[in-house]
Length: 226
Image (spheres, rainbow, N blue to C red):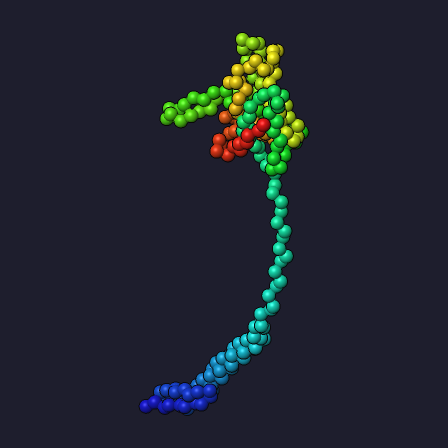
């Protein structure tokens, strides 16, 4: 035969006690079970109170702050100058009126410094590549020709602001055939000295010069001068 005990402390517990147990054992078992139930309920209550305490310490999120002010817009800057190198073609005719000199003033976008190197090339002739495309042949100035009339030289000088290409000869320049004076094309290359430092550049080779400053033929500026 079994006895059933109902204890109501935060709930209900059913305990079965065999008939073979004595009355003294029943009383001790009842006391032990009661203690276990009380300890379990107290532990649960403490855990619940701890959770409520920590949750209550963190208040609700406050409202978002006002947005910051936009930064002040910068002013548009002026166009800069080209400091990486420039290649310019000029075309003109040498005659008595211009003293057999072609004068070209550098544009404001090109600034020449004292340490810069200015090179000038004469379009000497034109040939074709394997695809039949025209290929220009350039000769670096000064360039001296031996003619029937005597010696003719294409030469140049420059300042920080301009370049002048001129003819020099040991005979009267008025005697020159127009092939040497009319519609002559010259290529001007301006190179920063830093690019030439330590390089083995062949200055007479316009292709090497243009490769050094990363300029292609399509990038060359072209002007006509008097």
